[in-house]
Picture 1 (tube, rainbow, N blue to C red):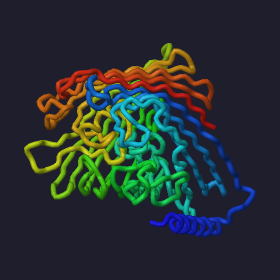
Picture 2 (cartoon, rainbow, N blue to C red; picture 1 turned 90 degrees about the vertical axis):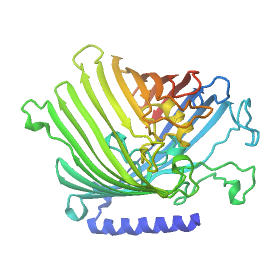
Picture 3 (cartoon, helix red, strand yellow; picture 1 turned 45 degrees about the vertical axis):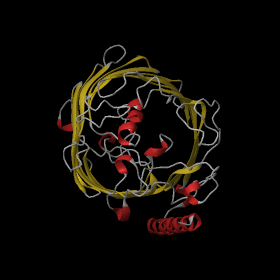
Picture 4 (cartoon, rainbow, N blue to C red; picture 1 turned 180 degrees about the vertical axis):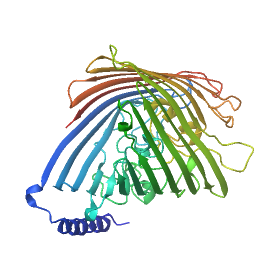
Length: 471
């Protein structure tokens, strides 16, 4: 598709829609307000045995990630705003184990792996209109992040293949505010495998597209083209029914229909998929305690096979906010169904749009050896505990312990035993410090002790340090 024609078409559509709504609402120039700001993040990461759990094979990585963004927001009045953000993230490797000489400037022991500024992309570009025609109806149209849906269990990251560079969805979200506590979102999503809707600065094409073999591969956004429709109801809860305001109930129910084209796909997305997902989320807080859980059922097809999956989680939480260091305890269980070898049906859980590290940074990477796709959470049970506390107003320490199991065995290979279901033990530590509202840092460590699910038993390690500036 011609990028220039797409850009002109998108710009024209946005201009006409904005003009029409501006006239409809009789926008007063005096109400117009423009704000903008930069964002900068630098990370150092070290990965050890992240894929094979084997010290004898070279898959370790040691590198820096540098992300920068520039955003701008134009408020035409209290009900209409336009938002845009440009983002770049590049990596500088000091070690890239397991690579091959066929990749330019990259070999198993190559230090200083090729450094480039990389692509500059439209991270967000949308307009938001509230109270359409004086009714409790809102519309957000364009490239946007989708937050606040079931704690990110199914709707979180629309571009999983580029890591944490972007999270956006190309989407239309219409929200009907039924009353102060109830709302219904109608969402349409169109996320292609690579960028097709907006121009990319400093982009180089794939050699497969008849470009020079020395050209750098462009950043893929998805494993294959994805499209989805969703109807999502939320009950926000109202603590006023309790005289002390200490109890609150939140409920969510949803239906998501997702299409995975399978074009140029791989792993668990190598074939065309149609997935229907019905689910609900609930949280009940009472005093210093809280119960929460989510359960979703899936059915549809994968290629010529029927599919059926089940996923969810349950947690009990307790806070001690009136105590020193304000500790908080959580304990829970996560279940994501796996594919059974002896049936023609596909029973593996499809994470839809949650291929991000909501359980673990390390294990999100490790799942790719099993599924062929990074972050494809499936065939998993997690018994999880969490303790967090704040030694000072600017410091927070969080500790996790996870016991991981597989629901189904997988075929034996150089990585998997083919006989066990014990994935292993995974302790995690995160130490955070805020210098100010604009500057923060953290250190994250994750350590996997493999179980009999794996053929090899070498421990895996993930380390990250981050410094972030946001304005």
